[in-house]
Amino acid sequence: MEVNLSAEKSSPVAPVEVKHVTYPVGVTDNPGNVGVPATREKENFVSGDDLPGFFDIKFPRLNIVQNIGKLQESFSPGELVFGQNTVLFTPAKVDPKTGKAVQKSTGPINLTVLGIVSKRFSEKIKGGIGGQIVNSEAEVVASGGTMNYKEWQLKEKDGMKLFENLIDFLIVIRRPEVVADDDTVFSFDVDGNKYALGLWSVKGSSYTAAYKEVLAFHRMAGVLKGGYPTHNFNTSCRIKTFQTGNKAWVPALVPGTKNTPAFLDFVRQILNPSAE
Image 1: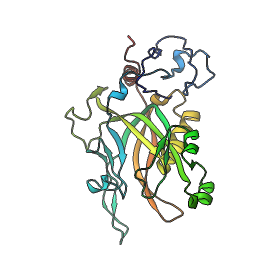
Image 2: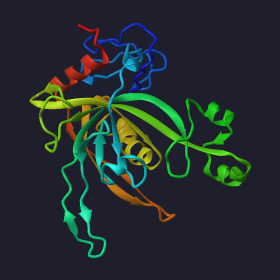
Image 3: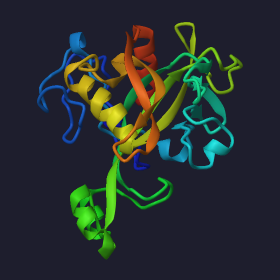
Image 4: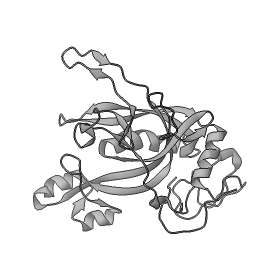
């Protein structure tokens, strides 16, 4: 499912309550052919039209703290931080000399992807901070860049830029036990649990670990065949060592449980607030 959050107004998203849904042209979350009716037995969370006003909202973002950047000045590497101020997950700390854990990790967070807000391309630069972001592969080429690593290696000396995939997800996170239940960060009450709505951007090694290896596979052939919102994932972080010897923290997603009817009703209210 691709969620278009542009500021332009258009017709509301067709509610999934109707027995037959005709998918609009361009919708990316169609499990079958465009125009083929879907039934209540196989619900599909489709948002092909605009969600008015979302670009007027500055959503809190989920971030992984790396060993570089401003976040590591306030938080520990490997932590999952929401809104740049709330720690949701802390990995285990290991004594490098003995290899023994000196601090246990907290439990993984429970995360549900509601859809894809945007698919863009981010310039890959040393240090991973900054760089140009464009909306299409045509813009990559126009800006003097490429998505092909080997081509970039040959032409880097001539000033060619290297770009990588960047996906923005609209997500819902269940309040973990390490966060106080004070209705400030997690304010949506569903099935006796508190939830928060936000955005999560993945690129580079995180794009591979979260999207290519897990979410894309499950959307095609796993627990997400009925749509992204139908199943949640237990999410933590792990350290990954690359062939270059460099290391980075990447997300680790494991399928959790099927989301409840009450939760799916909550999702419908977010994706289609105008539906009765």
